[in-house]
Length: 259
Ligand code: SF4
Image (cartoon, rainbow, N blue to C red; front, side, top):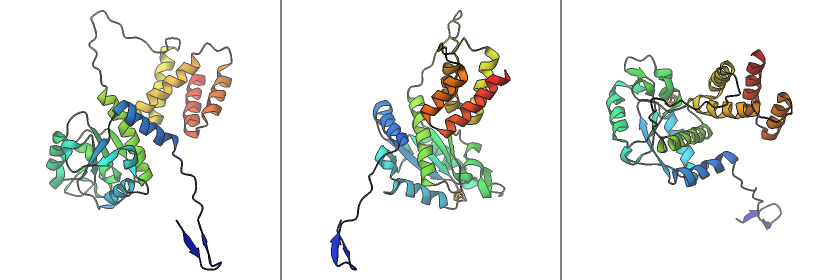
């Protein structure tokens, strides 16, 4: 693009910064391309909010944040949707349309409760015509809090939803034989410690991420590497360089010390 510098009277070309993608967005693209193998279509249901949430959703899909660049697209019919995005408090008038929308969407589907109102009813929670949050009538998979959530939080919530969608697409049902024993993960870690670590990880990082993280922690703990565990842990955290992971693993290390 050419612009005229009126002071100098010459044409100059402004320098454009290098455009790069964060690791999280690269991972989302990989998941869509390799695991889900298609775009994820989102249908939005406004159950009775102030419209602030809708403005942020449209900010998330329009060019500045541009969720469509990794295949997340709003659609006009629940019959085409993979993800249902419920905004606003669950009002009496919208309760049945919300349920009908849920039933009209093919399985496997992900339900996102969006915004403070979608999560809990928000500032409208105690109105005579409000049932509460989305979960008062529909089973919810992902909560995106905020009043309204920012576009970045919206895209982060979509990333969580894609992880769950991948799980649902590949869901397997195992029927246990009468004499079959369940395989124990990390049998070298004592049962009481294993349970305590899992509980703490899930408390801090949620059910799915907590399970992933505690498995990584226990693999480190049960490793046959002769290096003392605190050194191994520190080396691992230095390599990962993620303050959230450091906080969770430090707390899990406290649980190990307490036991
Ligand atoms: S969460 Fe806030 S912005 Fe969103 S609908 Fe409720 S009051 Fe409006």
